[in-house]
Length: 105
Image 1 (cartoon, rainbow, N blue to C red):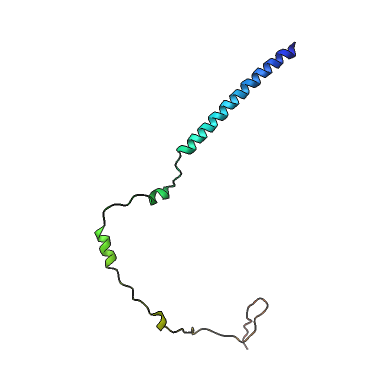
Image 2 (image 1 turned 180 degrees about the vertical axis):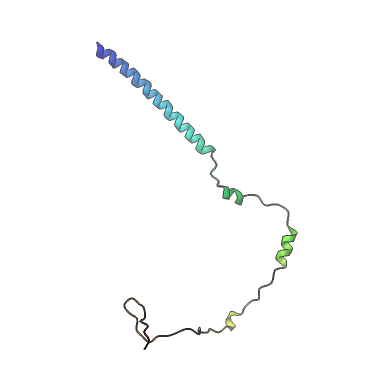
């Protein structure tokens, strides 16, 4: 007789526990979904970059740009290659590591 009462009580408590667990999980998922949907995914840098441009032109800036010095064009075909003054060609063979053994003779 005690086991029957205990069994009914256990079933009742397990039912309450499972119901409470389901309610907790549903609330948890709902809150996480609301937070992810309402939270902005745009970073502060992106907000600065997508700020709309002003419709007015700054005339002082345009004058500064126009007053810049012009770059002289170079005729690259007219230039001749030159060897540097400190270029030293060694007649000695390289070692296994690929370095040249430099010894004074």
